[in-house]
Length: 117
Length: 109
Image (cartoon, rainbow over all chains, first blue to last red; front, side):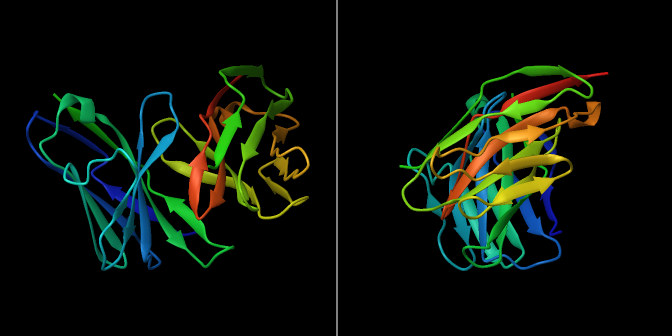
């Protein structure tokens, strides 16, 4: 099946720094990618929809200036957590969309564990 | 709006026991329904899906049937193994995915 990678898998940073997380579709092109956030023992929360060549669409309550998304190519989307603070510590998961509705499917990356000290 | 409600865990079972995880949904229209599995420290993997009413999704011994009349998509497996220990998420797709809260399943040898 389709493979999605994320880099890094884990990152620890100091409060106030910015962190970039990459999401790549390795064997297919994806015009649409999604970014999710998962808190411990909780479900995934959709943060934003990333569309290649255009601005991301953010879900209600997600600060677009805090979580910068760039989808510069059909195989790469990046999420930058700017001026990170401890409350941004979380598990961030991306997915890439393949196919066409109603048979489209999201393939998920392995996730990135962010810890802000 | 769309939402998914699934059985709260955690669920602890012995090997070869029968597993059921209940999932019900609320949606406008006719969404596709999914079960995803998340193993410790990993991202989500699609376990099975159903795209229309009465469809049965199956994979790795797991099954779920899309029941429009009861708006349900319960996950079942007849004989679980230790390797089935994971968190299971029910989800619906009506343009974007909406996930249930997840059910942690632990299978003891």
